[in-house]
Image 1 (cartoon, rainbow, N blue to C red):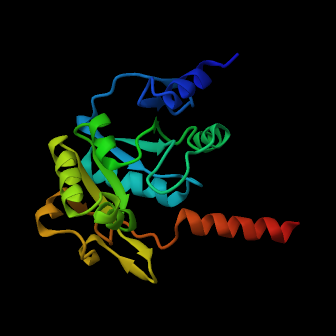
Image 2: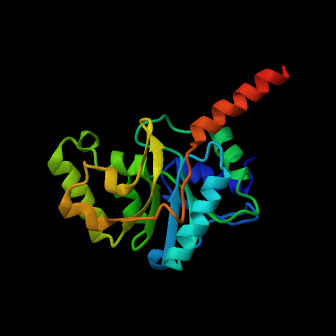
Image 3: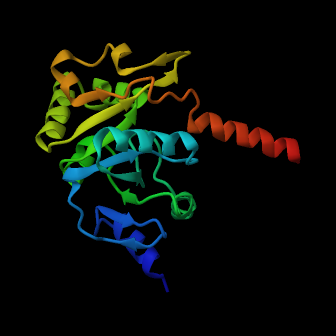
Length: 212
C-alpha cells in the first residue's frame, strides 16, 4: 500500500497533478502557492551541490522573492526519471529548502504552472532555451517566449563554463534583441561557478573506483 508521499507521486506521474510541493522536512503536499512572489531554480540536481545553494542565495538576495528548487520528472532531452531516482534526489533537499516536483518538460509549460515566477537558470540552459531546433523553427521559438512573457514569467541567468569558455548572457549571440528583456544577468562578481553537476558526478565516480 503506497504511503502519502508515494500517492502524491503516483498522481503526478498519472497526470492528476501537475506539481507537488515538498517542504524542508520532506513532506509532500499540494498546497496552492501564489507564484507571483517566487523564485524557481530548476535543475536535475544530480547531485545537488554548493553551487546550486549559493545560486539560490544570490538570486534570493537580488529579487527578495521566496525561493523554490524545482525538479521535473521529465525534461526536454533526457528520459523520464525513475521513481526510485526521484526519491533519491528529493532526499538531498531535506533541511535545505522547499522543492517543487513537476511533470513540465519545457519552460513554456512551467510558465503556465508558475505564473508570475522568475526562473533561475545557467547560461548553457539559456542558450538551449533560445535554440529554435527545440521548437520546430523560429516561429515556434518566438511563440514559446511570448507565452512565457504573457504568463508574467522571466529568467535570471547565471554565467556558466561550457564549450571551453566561461559564458555570461552577454556572450549568447542566439538571443534575439526583441527577446532579451526576458533574460536578466546575475553579475559575475556576485556568482561564478566553473563546475557542473555532470563534472561532479564524474569526480565522484572516479573517487569510488579509487576506493574499490
